Length: 233
Image 1 (cartoon, one colour):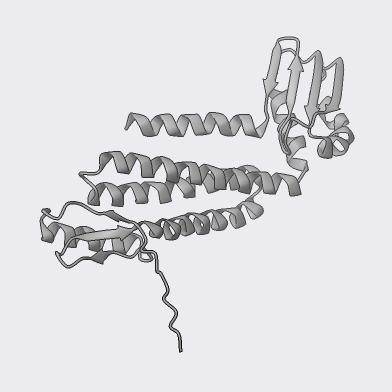
Image 2: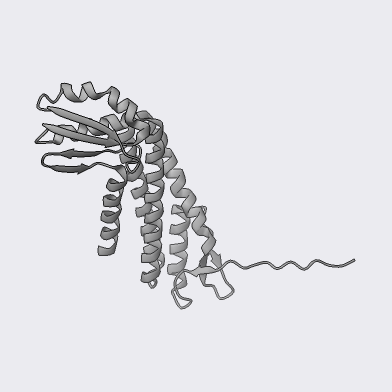
């Protein structure tokens, strides 16, 4: 009978500290990391050095997804705006915990720490953006709320041109009277569809300038702010 020889690829690893580090300190760091991230495995080699298999990043990603799923459920009860804030707040809490654990255990791996932080932050933003756009697609009323909020901030409301996603055009047109009720200064208002505007956002032109209230633009600003804050630390 012939034998089958199977090749098992050994997963690459990310070492935690140096082999020369104090073992008592490594033990304390291991306990702290296990307390904050119980699903993450820590392996000890024959020399006593501890390291984390790189595939454990999937467990960390799962923690972020679970946290944002919880925030999404609360958001459905509290509304779009409250849900988005709750999701980002929860994501920031998880991100801060992750940063604290990594900084305590990888003091000599600053470059790796920054790279890991950027990747996790990008992942958090991607998940938050997906959750938000999924909720907006289901609830087109959020576009109407967005437009009303922008109109309230305008100084010159005499002539307004509003562009929204084609799928949300009918419901926005149905609410045109509600836009006019609270703004007597509006003399002319035009609503048109624009496929470049994603669900939930709008682009408004006024005599004093244009207002880019597209959600993707707001996420770009948020991403730039969070990433730049991370570089300053």
